[in-house]
Image (cartoon, rainbow over all chains, first blue to last red; front, side, top):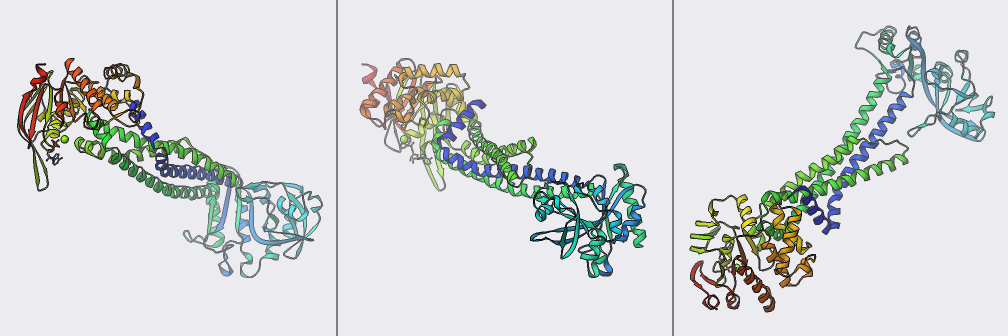
Length: 404
Length: 230
Ligand SMILES: Nc1ncnc2c1ncn2[C@@H]1O[C@H](COP(=O)(O)OP(=O)(O)O)[C@@H](O)[C@H]1O
Ligand SMILES: [Mg+2]
């Protein structure tokens, strides 16, 4: 018997028990659908995280406190201070340096309220992050020196406080945590990235944020120092120099670092490894459901062999070889598994699209994952089909013919 | 054609040992039309299974058409069943949900014959049993007698050396039984070797030679003079 005839035979037998065949495939279907959905959502998230991190700025290096809780430690443990930014800015290959501090702010403009974080930094921040103002301007070095109570609002924050137009915002006074600030600019919208609204922000001089919103022992602590290197080639050497400079100013030996210097690539690869782990884990969950699906196929094939004992006896009596019977049942279980796999791929693809649309994540599907899923289903069909098929092939024809 | 030499068949299941065939020595020649009779449990079906290569003798020799069955592998036995033997069962054993013609084609499918050859031969065999007009019917759309005629067509399809029928009329009314026996008679007249098992003397009366079994032994083996000399 050739493959075409075996396939015809298996389709006929699957057709006669359509509902049962469908239910049998369900396990594989769900398993494969999960795998495909997970992989494509995972891949999509990964791509997104990558572009998000890349959007942070080019040739970006960050310095953060390594041991601390919160912003660069507290009290005598403060390890990242505003003063650390200065020596770094003297490095040749450094283009911009921006120390960053962050505080939560309750914004108030008349009856309009908004709550967002206030970023305290220097004018270089706008260059590093490529923020441009839509109206008004960014604050100046002088305003940083003067601890001026001026603020630049993100588009969302401006809209919350001043309504759509926002033009009358410039020059207005808003209260942040009950301290009056003059609005000097509104940023151009950057839109959202994933679930985060990049425009839901406000930026003020770091000195102002430090003196008005920071108190007690953590007063001197800053969140991070953003550095832009002059060129991609300079990143490695700049990082080394930065580490050296930091150790110098902190009076540390090597191995005693209380700070962490990371390039954008480092952040990127650690983010990638997180999503990879997640994908792997969810893949494992899906693999288990595929296994369960396989056991379902074996179960039904065993039932089918028992039900068709007489048929098997008849076939053997008229000359079917053991191998032929074996292939007949194996082709049937593999057909079931592959069919389940293919439907699963379609479901998973549809499902991931749906989830992607709902969560505004772009999903990506690779041919590899489809081939892998279908190939894996075929393997399941073989592995879990062999036992029932062998049972059928080994039946004693006389016993089988006598079976009621 | 069929040569049994001191064949014993013993079924051993645990403590129980059933001596189903005892020292059976027998020759059946080409073109013979033989019936096997005997009380229930006397070993008739066992005899048919051994002749049909579904089972091997426990001891003794069996040579079918020059092939030593005792030393054949199970794969060789399936080829022998496919090529040399046509089975007709008491309960027809047609494949459900499979048309008459596809049932008839099945042994040829296992023989690896081409689609065209299968179709032509199957149509010819169905015509022989008078069912060409029903060839696309499924077994459940046919009467018992018609189903048995399909089964006979299937048995014929690979042009076997011998047709074996274990109580082929056991599930049929007397009219259908006569029809089936008519077909067997015609096939025998055309040169086919046929061995059948039956309880009924009127069925055995159609055959040329009647072998009686009792307790696994051949009790008598005689020509059916009535028929032979009519
Ligand atoms: N597979 C088997 N295992 C054990 N005993 C069997 C088996 N098949 C047949 N027998 C026994 O062999 C004897 C002959 O059986 P069988 O050939 O079927 O008789 P018949 O067809 O003449 O009625 C009976 O006693 C029966 O119980
Ligand atoms: Mg019997």
